[in-house]
Length: 186
Image 1 (spheres, one colour):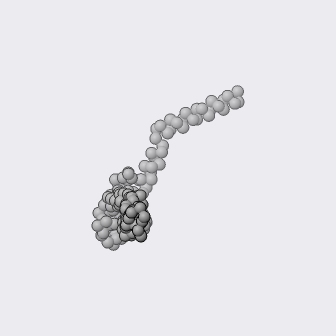
Image 2 (cartoon, helix red, strand yellow):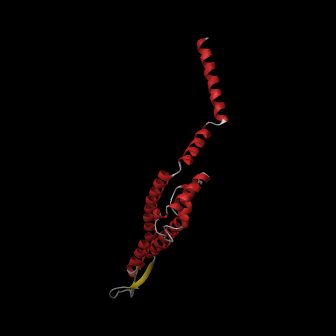
Image 3 (spheres, one colour):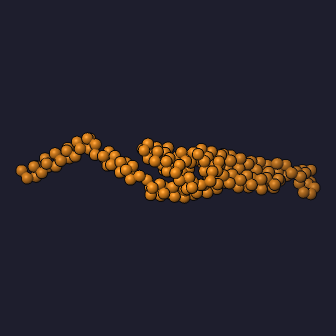
């Protein structure tokens, strides 16, 4: 999970989107919906978690289960088929794998396997599209962003690096250095 950015930055992105609707792609229920805008405002990334997770889950289920099971059953199951010719022992059947006896099963399994790849390819295209939209929106946002927000956020990041604990650590390091220097020169 991606953590949400500072609330000031989230609000700035929301205002940016409201003022720059021409930069938004056309609505699409699966690839460009309100969740994409919400995620962009809160994190700066453009995508939809719901659709991504649904497609990934369905793709795994569709591709692995029926195709693998069908392939195993078709190649390991043997059935009795009429034998060619007349046998002296009176045996008129022979054993063959299901795939040999029923060759139509192979195209069905192949189609099922290929069909399972369609959602994956859709998601792959959408991820590429999302990266392009995200890059364009972020570029435009930072070009138009109020400099005071940038300065405040940067200043807070710098100040967070220099907490009282940080100063205590610097003082302790300085004391150790002084002790080492005193031992060296004495």
